[in-house]
Length: 515
Image (cartoon, rainbow, N blue to C red; front, side, top):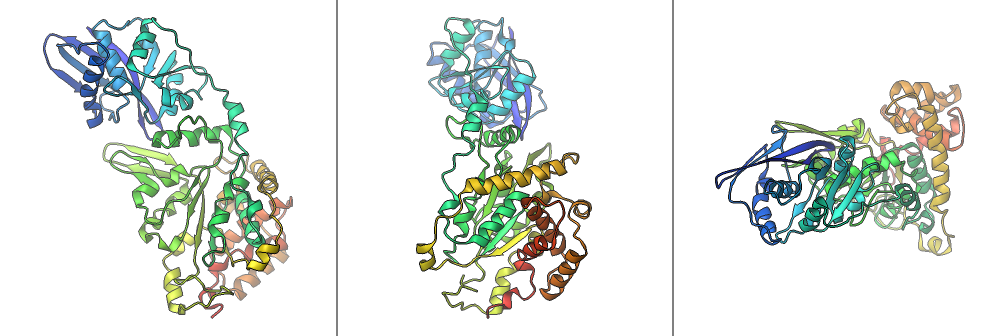
C-alpha cells in the first residue's frame, strides 16, 4: 500500500514542502531515501518505540520511505510525526481520505509525546502558501505557528491526539491569536529606561542621533562611565517594529530555536550582546548544519560589542561585509543559504589598556605606544563603517547625587520616530534605503550637501583636527540626521559642527591628547 503525508524542510529562511511517500510490501526491511541526515534516519527507532507505547505494533513488512524532493537535504527530528502517521495509514490504522489536506511537523518522544521543533513559523507560512487546510505542530510551537492567519493550526500533545484528530474520534479546536492586539500592546513595555541615567547628556544626545539615523556607534571611556548601561537602553528609543519587520525577525529566531516558550511575535527590537570570546561561526552564522549567527539574530535591532578591542581581530573583520551589504551568505558545496542582518552596530571600549586614559579621577600608566597598539586592534576598514565615535567620562559622585532623573526614553523615542518618518518620506522611491545611514555617496550629495558656509567649516575642521578622508561622508550622513531631528530641510553649519564632534577616533592626535 502506498501512502503520502506532507511536511516541510527549512533551509535558512527558505521552506520547501516535503512529500513523505511510504510503501508497505512483503519483507522485513526498512529503507529510507531522500538525502536524510542522521537525525532523520534515527526516527525509525523513535517511531517503533512510540507506536509500541501507544498500543500499535510496528509492521513486519518491507517499508520503503521516500522524502521528495529527493535531492534536497532533510535535517532534524521534525519528520518523526509525518513518518509515523504515514506508517499507521499504510497499516490502515489511520484514515487516509483527508491526509493530503494536512501538513505535519513534530519530534516524537519514546512515549509518543510531541516535542518542539525549530522553524514552526516559516513552516506555517509555507503551509498557507501551499493551501493546506491545516498544520499540525507540537503544542509548544502553537503560538508562533498560529501567528499566520488563513490556515488552521492545531497544537497537539501526543501522537494519540493526532491519530484521534485524523480519525475524527475526538474534537480539537484550532488556535486563534489576535496578533495585532498582542503585538501593539507589548511594543512600549521596556524594563530599562534612559530616565535612570544621571548626567552624560552629550552621550545620550549621540545615541539619539544614532537611533534617528540608524548609525553605527562606538563609545570610548574608562570603566564605570556607563557605556554598557546606556547601550542596553538603546532599544527603548528606537522606532517600533512594523508588523513586516517583526514577522521577519521572528522567523529568524524561530529557525534558530531562540523563541521563548509561549512567544508568538517578537514585538521589540532585538538586542544581542555576544561575549568577546565568540567565534566567527557563532557571530556570522554557519556550522555543519548552518544556523543564523548573532548578526542575524540582531536583524532589525542592535548588535552590541562590549570591550571591542578584546574581540579576536579576525572575528571583527568578518563584520565588514555584513555591515555594508546587510545580509550574510553561507556557502556550502551543495547549497547556499542567505540570512538578513540589517542591524545597528554599537560598541564600547576602554581608551587604553589600563582603561584610564583621559579619566580626570585616575592616572593613566600607559605609554603612547601602548595606547596606539591597543587602538590598532580595531582596523581602519571597520572604523570606516562606524559613523559616530563619542568619548565618555565618568560622572562624579557629587553630580550623581544632585542630578535629577534623566529624560525618559518615551520622549526621546518620539523625536526619533519623527526623524525616521522624514527619512522614510525622502527615500520612499528608493528600494532598500530606509534611513540616512544607508545613503550612498550619490545620495549624500543629493540630500546632505552643505551650503558654502558649511563647506568652509568642514574644510577647516578637516585641516585643524587632522580628520581622515573617510570621515567626510560620515560627517555629512550624521549632519543630515541632526537636521532631520530639528525638522530642517537643509544641512546647516550647526548640524555639521555637532557631527564633526562625533569623530574622535579619526583625529590623528587622539593617542597623544591628555598625556
